[in-house]
Length: 282
Image 1 (cartoon, rainbow, N blue to C red):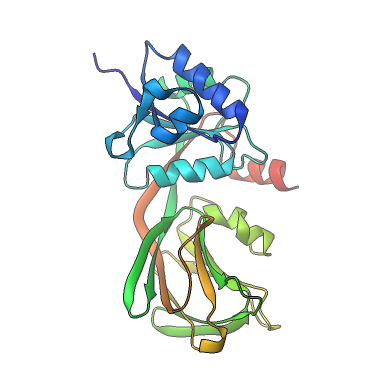
Image 2 (cartoon, rainbow, N blue to C red; image 1 turned 90 degrees about the vertical axis):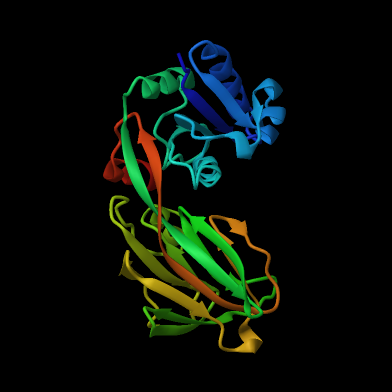
């Protein structure tokens, strides 16, 4: 009989996460095939379970042990792999988590037994053009931020949607967020919350030098292009789910649209979007 494969993605900076990973690996050793990415396995003292990213295959379940940032990391590890992710909250907010920290082993067993519900979350893809050539192609579960880099000056960003000019802002930057990401950076910048079962792209200028700058919610079919028309205010970087892409001179165009990729998050404790918003942010 083939054992179910479980990928553990711990926050290696959090001792509780590594302890939980060891407990899961020890308790489920005879029931599952447990694996970790090599760097995580080494940090948590589980080198016998180390697996390269190329050999992960399609696990039956990925378990993110930490906070929301760890769930994002698990999503990026599995971005091209159709596998569900259970977030066990060992961090601060845990807004995306599907289980608490009381008994991670029992939570994993429950999900493998078919308990819990899945939420399908939309993703945006971003393509970056630098100095006349394609530079980066990434996916984001939360958001893409285009904005000021190492310099202190605001940037000048022109935003087009479907080939039509929406706005040109001198600002700190522009966020293009998924509904999932509407509770992240966009929330702290004053943006609206969007229920995660919707498919949409949220555009939000940050620190715009304008009394008219407002958030705009676009359909999932929207194609967003951001360019930098003023070379004197073009010192910008692109940040994808907190990961700063290599930036410098020559950034020309950033294209953002809904990706065909979906991220599958498992909710074990049945907390819906509204109770999660209430318990986390109010």
